[in-house]
Image 1 (tube, one colour):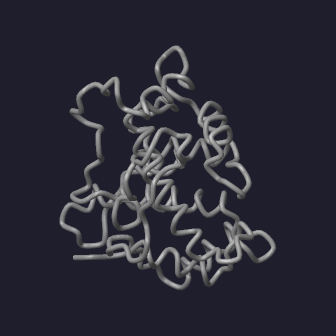
Image 2 (spheres, rainbow, N blue to C red; image 1 turned 90 degrees about the horizontal axis):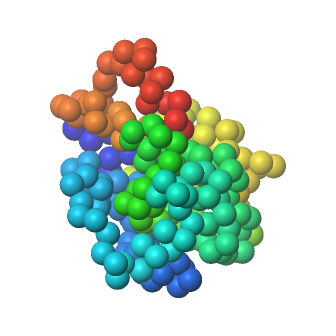
Image 3 (cartoon, helix red, strand yellow; image 1 turned 90 degrees about the vertical axis):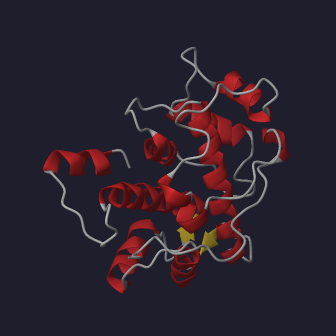
Length: 218
């Protein structure tokens, strides 16, 4: 049974990462940033990164001594790389929830595989945003936000869409940073829900502590 967030992506969701980030990383995962069968590319059971991986050298240059990246390091990385282009740099809070989306061991940091996975998702979201930000103002209007979420496969009620627009809009428009923050939360919450809805019936039962763990990180 299909339900919100499980449809297929329509429109140009892929695209290479910036050249100064080390080369193309392919396109974005389908259906709102998810890979088929709930898997994640290059994470569990993956081999150590190859020395010739263009992203590995960049990762090691910004990672801390523990070999992982925290929110402040991620923010510097994205800002220095110019990932947002003409758009405003990502806020520290948005970088925190980016890490929270992939932080499956609740360390508050991300390793190399999660780093690569994040850039794949970010590229998809950026391409999607640019498709609707036709005047390159760095913002989209509420109805365009609705179209953008629909193009990523989300099927959300008008009430939920209205709540999303009110939560993430400023002066009646949604900025790129807030747009990405919304995409991160939708992906993380939908994936947490999806893993528990093993029969794909569109409903699950949460224990209180489990609900807190699923929502507090993002």
